[in-house]
Each structure stands twice: as C-alpha cells, then as structure tokens.
Image: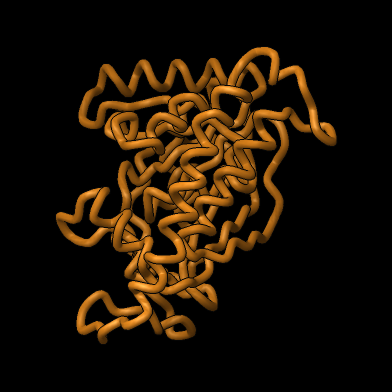
Length: 276
C-alpha cells in the first residue's frame, strides 16, 4: 500500500497544536454568524422554489435555474466561513464520475460551487441541520457505511444517474482524512464508471494558502460535526482550491489500477510524494 507525504517544496502546514491566542475570533463570530443566519433563512425558501419540475425547465445563460442557484448558495456558504475559492482546470461536461480527496464536510459545497453533480455521501449527513436538508434536495445518494447491501444499492443508483447523463461525485477514501495524506481509495466504486461507460475525472481539494493544506480544517480526533462547524466559523480566512485534473482512463487490468491512478494524481496535485 502506498502512502503519500508532503514534499520538501511544501513542508509548511498549519499546526493543530500549540496555537497562540486568537484575539480576532470573537470579531469573526460577530461578523459571520449573522451572515450565516441570513443565508440559512434564504436557503429554505430558495430550495423550495428551485427544487421542483417547473424550475428545471427554466434556464439562465444555458444552465438550469436550480443548478445556478445551487452553485451560488454553495459558494456563498463556503465564503461565509472565510474561504477564498479558486479553481484550476476544467470539469468535464455531461456524465462524469468525479473522484476527490475528502478533507471536510465543506467538500460537497466547495465542489458544488464549481460544478453540479449528485454526491454519494454517508447517511449521517441527512441528519445534519440545514446541510442535510439541502443535500437531500440536491439529489445526494446516501450510503450506510459498513453495509455491503447499502453499497450495492448505491452503485445501482449511481449507474442509473450516469446513464441519464448526470454527473456524480464520490469520495473513494470512504470518509474524511486528516489532511496530511491521501488515504487508500476503495476500488469497488470505480466499477460504476465502467458499467455506465463514462470518464473518471480526479479532483484535488485543498484548504490553505499557497497550495499548502491547513491542518486546522479537517476534523480533529473525536471532533463532532457541530464542534468543527463552530470552530471553522471563527477560524482565520484562508484559501480553498478546487483542481480538476486530467481524466483517468478505465484500466483493462481492473478497477484497482484506475483507483490507484486517480489517487496518485490527486496526491501529486496536493504536493505529496510516493515514498514506497
């Protein structure tokens, strides 16, 4: 099994321990909390207005109205938490299986700010306040982790959506990571790309200035969603980068090779090197 570690060119990361007192944190809460509450108040009627068959027939500059509003809402919530969004590369159009490293609960919103897709996510997200409600209405496919039966049903739904011409996003690591490496990609989910005959495009997600991962962003050990949510709301502003990488060809020698190639490209884009 390969592991990836930070290269010498990108050795600086924000420490998770030994932090100095942040005197500006109360001011950030005072500024961002009202913005977040206002955004939440807008989100509910907005979702009710755009997630319906009539709105799907409306287009703005060639894009469906519900897609436009979802991208706006998602990008806005990431920015409220103090992240400056940037993108490199281009997302493939049409039916695509997007595979990304998983750093934070913000990953779905960050990717949605750039490209609309249905996500495969853990079932717990459906119970998260507001985020879960919106994720469900945006077409998220929920998976009960540890259940082989659930994964089989999820893969069938993913193939169905891909064959309908929709894009789907997955996090093959199976859960959020610590941010200092890319964990093993589970290869089974890549089978859906072969079954639906669609391309696989890796996406590298990075939170931190200068392309260096800020290790304050991922969940701390045993940190709950709510605790991480509150902590990030008061943290200093930094960058959030979405990098759409070159598509990975479906390998003739099995989905494991496709998964490992996608993982390698994401790791290298984040500045990790293979020390195996």
